[in-house]
Length: 305
Image (cartoon, one colour):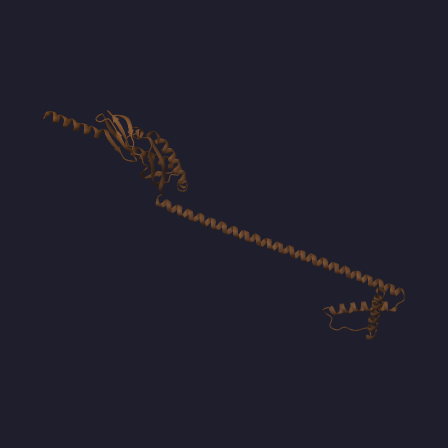
């Protein structure tokens, strides 16, 4: 009876030891093993065997990437503007023993380190830089925080600033400034357009003046050429008449008389105060003079032919 009880007790004790020595670790988790309070090894996902009684499970670490919200905090910028900022941190445990034993309360340590560096980085920048260079801020924060958490076995993968909220009065002032800048740009563009229009108009007027001057120059040239040709013709006619007079042709003298007479009549007719024209010569004399001109013209044509 006593032997059976002892055997049963030993069997139960053996079963308990087996159960205590077998540990199952889920995927995405790692456990640390402590022997008499000292770290000995890390259990990976799956079934693991430990020494019962003397070994125990220490820290249970999540190896998956985790997300931590950074609460809102007020920051004073370089130009003394008060803004409210919040963000989010993505991190992952890559070294289980360091994450378990190098820092106490890992999440609180990461959060406080991130908030401190947000105040440091953003406090060294102007408000305009905060609003326009958010990617640069994220990159600087990631570099600083990742380097600081590296001894803890942590890899910070991303830090994102979610919202930057300036005070209401500052937002209104920025809105007025933006409106003024847009009006200024519009005025500059309008003035530039008017300036360009005036330039084009002036260039057009200049070109028209040049063309008009060229036209007057061409007209003067043609008029001078015409006068030159007329003078040449008159000189040729005078020479022909002189030759005719030298040969004793009376019609040549009539030509000169008729020419001077016609020119005198033209001057008298064109005078503004002349109303009546007296004909001091007889009509037969005028006709005879014109006949002489005709005879001279015929003789000139005959010689030319």
